[in-house]
Image (tube, rainbow, N blue to C red; front, side, top):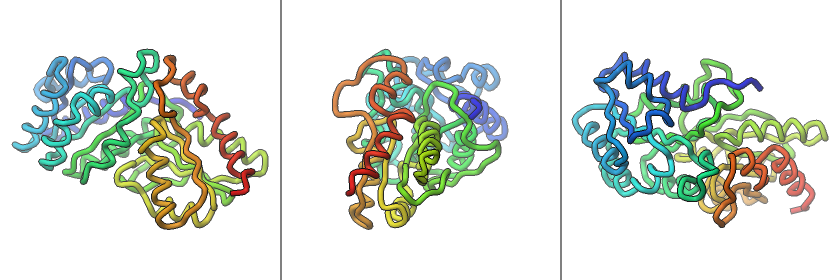
Length: 313
């Protein structure tokens, strides 16, 4: 697969186009225009840009105030701060108050891998899945980022968009449209299903291809929306393939795997193997090295799927 723009570059390029057509759109950042790729936007549309400085809690409050008077604010800052330091403001000022604020959370998961636990964001899915009315999406490439941004812009509900830093392999063709809350089936198969999101999607597809070479046909579902999660796709996968492996750049506690297991247990009990980060402080390093260490690369996904198929459960 060819690599395209990073999700953050695709986001800000599309946001600039949307903002040129709608002066209500305002981008806010907390001294993070570099890490969020907002420099070009800020230079092009200074009247629709707010630099708050290193004050993420204030950033959310300002965005909520802008939304209250009819603007369409996009808060752009690192995921580790948006889902921890600013959680109270996001919970009350935005979600509970039903304000149309979109948070563009960059460097999610272990994108800041070498900086350690303070900069890891491997808890955000677990927390934000509990917020009623919130749209929580994790795109896997620049094309999906653009498609999901367009879909979210057509909604007045708050949203949390979590992306990494690096340019990712292109999974989708330019112009592909996406429906928030609707999973995408990327591979067909009836031996098992791999349910995956974000930067793990490319590795899951590589794993599916490797398994196919062994005669094992697995379904691959891109679960780009974590809230609301496509329960119908999960139930169908459980019924039609009998085994599920989930893969996520998140703690094994409370994320995609937990959500899938809950749905399966309630509607169609089948074995579910959850691949994610264990309940510990993670090793520090580049994200690819961290993925490999914890078995979240294609090799690890193949091994986990093969083990599940051979377990006899």
